[in-house]
Image 1: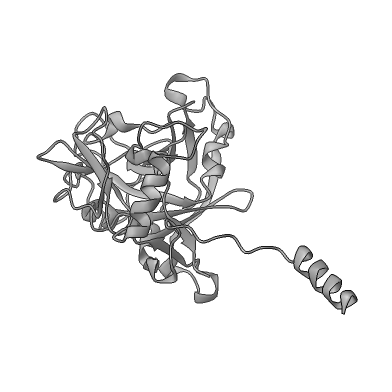
Image 2 (image 1 turned 120 degrees about the vertical axis):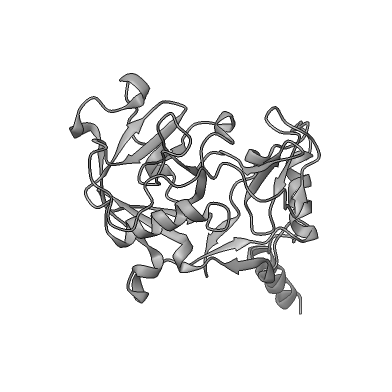
Length: 283
């Protein structure tokens, strides 16, 4: 009898304990599929893949252009040609001379602002860039001044590069903040998506010391092999992703855990760009 008890005790000691469930943990129903035509798959030289979730309902004109550019394979043989320290990585046609394919709106209207401050979770404090901010039910960071609302330029957001005039960005040239957030770009550049996988391949590229972070020579740029919509890839090659729904008490508890962490960590709240994209590969 004693031998059996000792053996059972040894077995219990060796078995790993399952992590305790937390109020902020998502349940299976919180994970929702991202449509394949809202996933932009960027393949860089060296077999490095970056995946962008497109903000189709917030910037429809620019996303329509991006889809058409991807379907036309316009970015094949383009490059990541700008890496400015603690600012942005930018990609597209470095010469800005490559003709756009038929069907592209060369000067779509600026989509700096969105229809309304439609958030499922509102953060408790204003920040230096907005009167209020929060997260939409499907996971997009949104801010407002009390009248207009807009998507925010957080780390990994994808924006449309443009010339001086607001309507001069077609979506052919894109950028992402690689250091801290770039909130001073809010309402000045159109946000068309967020990088949900492979951000390390952009933020880890060599910085340029040339003006504005533009590489001084073409050889410094990182070649783009292809950019495709996931919906255009063969079914067996498509990546599938899910976003975490935020319209539930579990995500509210997650925000509180970020704003009020356990001691000895001290926090005075949380800003919208402190909440990373809640996205995962579909299991």
